[in-house]
Length: 123
Image (cartoon, rainbow, N blue to C red; front, side, top):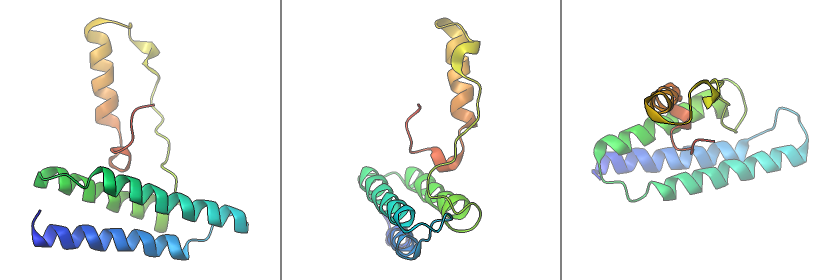
């Protein structure tokens, strides 16, 4: 990892923790605020540790873009919701359970996944 990439990652990490420290839930309930703060901190720790061993610059860049998107869309600017937004895609029931149609359906679902959900497993 280059020095500039390392500094970007550390700055992003600190930004997430600053957001968590000043986070206020939309409901205004103190327990909701605390729960959401804990979620933000735990999610950041998990994802940053999960990607700690990345060495490929392209992979690191994608992770940085994902983190920026999650901060901008969910946490701070728009929705004030720390949890990942659901994607509304049709279920895999449209394709048969074998063969090329299923693989094509899975590929389309993967392509349609927003950048801020790239680190989450398919549900």
